[in-house]
Length: 488
Image (cartoon, rainbow, N blue to C red; front, side, top):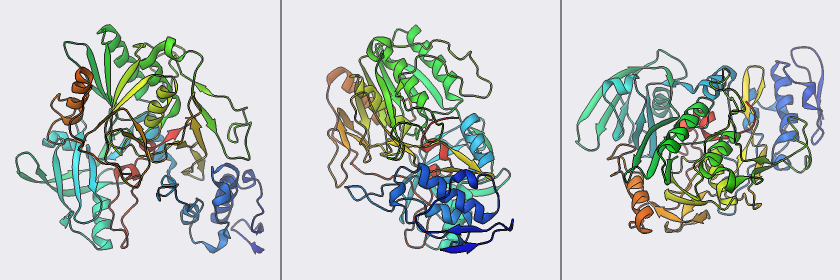
């Protein structure tokens, strides 16, 4: 046992395996109090609380450093880390991400194809009226340099720190010099951008194919802004009388779980979902009957058939009925950036006997979620629950993968569809883009092209260290877009 005295002069005793209620330390913003709050809160709510090594908070320098230790170090059966998603953000930054979709940047999204040298990263999409789109950058531009540092071959900590700081600014007004190459033409562009607040559109590129029979839209985030956009999108699809639907979720890392249940309902309709569970939430074994965060008795989340009003100023009256297409099957386009709430859409629909055809690559594998927890200006995200569908299934920690994917050491859930690599030579929504083309062809013939993506699990990529030589993935800087979230 150690006796420690924080700044407020009150003694805090630490005894290994003995925990005071987290409420004893909540919003007491001296470092040692904060660490004791994290320790108790993790013991109360973390899904694998009994796998945390209980360390004396006073012996770890820094609150965030201590939080980083409060997670399991165990591996899945396939050898992947069980918990790749332990994270935190300044509370104001979290609110901006979750409620308005705002983050700092230049208006382009980077897809990291190879995090270790020789690295490769390509712009996957851009937002309109941003520095990137105004310059003319678009999908298919490969990153070569950041502030004079060779992105492909940099291997020192100082170099990769410069790259990470440039790619993922933490404030407005940061100037960063980039060199890009257009992979279609080979043209090279040297440009300096100034970071600004970027309001990403979570739902876009709505269109139809096959003489109006097939609807398509790009869905990038289950955030508060998306709810009204999804409502309008499905109303348009209903009015167009589409008979099939392709949802492009290749870069959708997740968000609000109840919004995932809304999407699933709008796909399948009342007949397919009435009385069925979208997801039953399961907390750690200390809480078999009651939610440890809200105190409410645990009950399943059914398919949500009405407008919830996630935004602070909802665009529609909560309770407004949602439109639905009443489909028995749906196509989803996926990559390893398809995570959490997006995977819940797949699992929830499959539990309701709605056929899901997966086109693309192995999803990231995150059947877990959390309630965001603010303490002293920092919001913490630690895995608190998992979930199962109407059939009681929820184990897809190695993700979902199309049945014709090349096998590897990972063990994803194999479902109908085609393994197709992300095609950066065509714009998203272009019927010649490889994933979309494969979906349209499968819809009419039931056949797949030769498999061009393999089973793999990139998961959550942390900042580069000298040992791992990994650049940050943009998911590390937008916590909202990589999660299954309960509460607002």
